[in-house]
Image 1 (cartoon, rainbow, N blue to C red):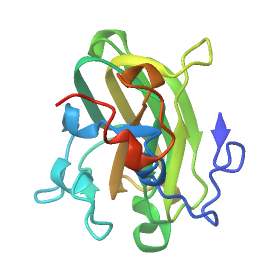
Image 2: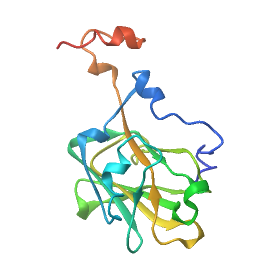
Image 3: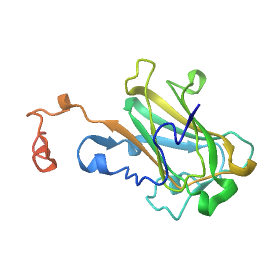
Length: 188
């Protein structure tokens, strides 16, 4: 099992999940997916996971594990999952052990990453790789909260971002290095 210290996820480090998006290296593909959760308190559901507001959150309601399901319409390359959690505010509602699973449907999900979070209070970056250490291609991504801090029952997750790399072969007119030039690389 990886811990936040093992994989460079220290909360003291400022992580900006949109930095690489702005640089044109990855795209946020969460908007291309259908999102669902295993349970939620009324008014604290999927919309709060995707609203870009760190003051709102998804709150699970029920027995562990708590699940966030992200289903893509076509096979999608996933390189990183960013999760915003805040132990300082949420205490026992903060996830402690998270499993990232992938597959073509709910019946063939395989765990691709298991992470232990040590009192996180910022963005957490989880790099996703397949068995050949390449970015993962999947139809379904599942984030499973297996345990909370202080043995809490329900969890709070404030935001989730899913990144997919932009390959240089996506560009029709060449491989430009600046965002300003990349805007001219596709035909509209």
